[in-house]
Picture (cartoon, rainbow, N blue to C red):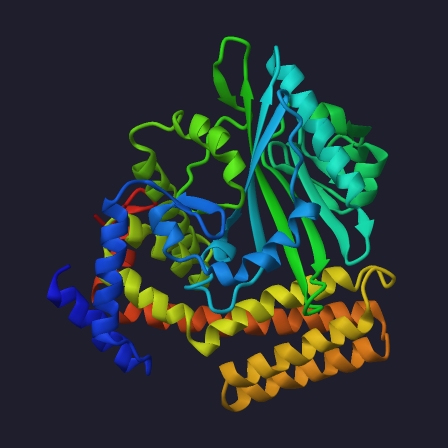
Length: 442
């Protein structure tokens, strides 16, 4: 790694008041570059998890028990030989060494279906997703929030507002239970989108829950994004959404799933790393040009830089994620979770929500200074009082959204300053803005 770039990131960190130890950064760079050159997949024998070597370097195995307590809710069961699965952590859940303040509990699961036809595989998928949704719709310490399955066949309006042709269909628990969504077309015709029909073109498949951890009684939004493949009788494997996801940001939780993982990874092309980097680069462009969210951009840049050998910039981003202000990312996510949890008064203990707000207040005090701290803490105290008194839900939701928006503004401004401070990162972003989402910065 050129000394000039390392000098830049160390100096930029110091200018922002971030203590980046050069010797420690160089040790991390040596370690991660060695891991990247040592083969693609690593198994941690002690914890029983596996994944891409570079991703495994960011895993904190001490936090695995917390996520494993959720797997009975979010994970799908194998039904061999018809259905086999491989459940993994993704996002900040898989990068606990880097993400000091993880937001949601993000899971990723490969669902592999053996069937005679694609239509049959889609029907099997629809069945197992609906069964999972109904089984976990409501229980002690958890509640289903939303399911995504299928794409809208036409423009129209459902009971939550306008829908556009080709966009993912979001199903509320009640709609999953009913097996259909009533909507009105642009021409005013009343129709129903049935679950079984939506499953025939599944598209983006995802389930979201609000879960209360039984150990620390904190609430979290837990999601499981599905990558579904169909294996035909001749052995041909086809992704049902047309795209086989790579494995560069997942940590798989059970070594028993290695045979399925290995079978699917063989389907990835020789350009899988380049394709993954291109996808992330497009998202960086989106979150810095089209729809600015510099916190999301920084998370994706970290993965781009790790996988393209720009380790000095990646080491700098690791330090950014460890700063107290990034706790506001977690504050924003947890406020959304509290809003979802408060929508059903009998699902979660009010005391647990009040205790979570107490923790968010302390995080905000650590992250902010001056007027911003006073405004955020004042809002959170008002929310806390509202939960304690079971105040009107509409007012609570408005306060939650205001606090969430304030937290995101603060964290967005922080990451924007931090990214633009390093000349090489700033040049990468300038090039991306000038040339569009296809730039790679290589």
